[in-house]
Image (cartoon, rainbow, N blue to C red):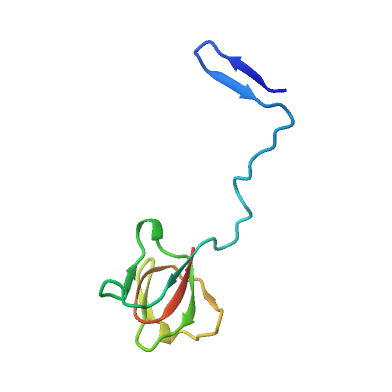
Length: 111
């Protein structure tokens, strides 16, 4: 049975007894829990994506389609590479933090 208790400083404590279950606040999280697809399409006149703010650096990435042009990735702590330099195996996940992308590839960024 629920009880309500009022303290001396106006604080109220409400308990629901033993029959109350806890809400599910944390589902089973995997290694990566969010995906952002970079399409390599021209958006607002550019094919660049800088990962800042809520899109802070991704933990890893997966190449979907290498595209026809040159795609450059910049790592979280510096350095850059072209996607064509990587051995492209469908579904391969590269655990390199990415901060910036430019080019025509289609890439899934994993968070």
